[in-house]
Length: 260
Image 1 (cartoon, rainbow, N blue to C red):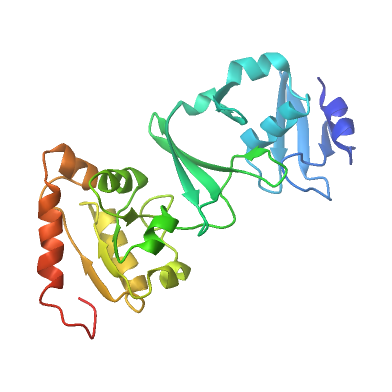
Image 2 (tube, rainbow, N blue to C red):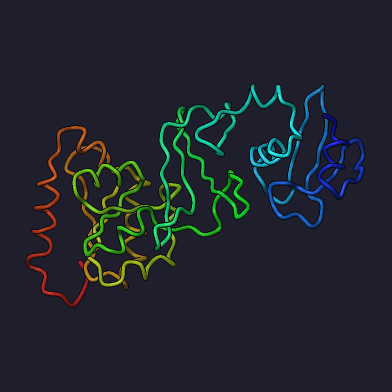
């Protein structure tokens, strides 16, 4: 499988020095933005429009334009239609982000060694390893239906809180990635921010609270009495009663007319 053959199969093929340019199969490419080259017997690809290399290789594989031996060596199937490079490690958890109607938009995957990757199924049904153009808070449908919403820093903490009966949300990507345009989702809700107990986590909690202050009916930041985050707290024997009682203490004397 040579760069020239792949380029001609993809369309828009033209020679560029020792390399070939063609239309990238990982996005709707009208002006050829994919470069294909061969170095020391290894096929190399790069999309100048920003597609991740893994997404390009997967799109080539679907078209039968990627060496079969390379596929066996470098790709792992997580579930039907979702494959990822073995060099990323091992996927241990998938967190699905849904729109207001409950339809899946994209997923964030946790891998070991610890890293995170985001991907989604494009309109043609192909899996794309890149950030979805429309970002939403985690557990959006459940959050919209709730009067009291907790905001944690990560999906793992939200899932733990859900297991204990609380409705929690977060943003993909960790601290510092909250989006101000999400404010209307929290209009007239009681919003309780649960920070990770480290400098980035505390800064993130303050930023989130500031962005939601004009929308929330009641707003407060609640630090954990032990542990770094929700998962640590419950893993160390913490009780859901402490969190419920803390919320009650904050809300009972409150008579409206402002945020905490």
